[in-house]
Length: 68
Image (cartoon, rainbow, N blue to C red):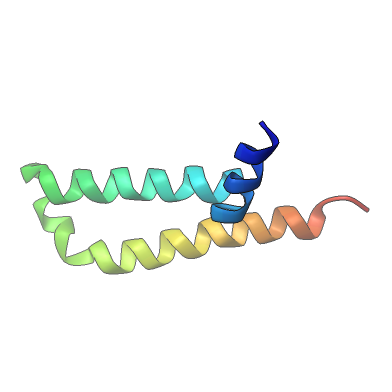
């Protein structure tokens, strides 16, 4: 179990990042594949950038606020 946790911490580092990026990938996949969401396809790049920044900011905020 220690080995698995060490690999997870090396690759991802934080559960917020993992879950956030998975949600972003699912949402962008839905936008790309659902015809009703076709008008949003032009904004996939900015959506990805803003969402990734929000996820990383949430992680940074949690770390900064953490153990005092």
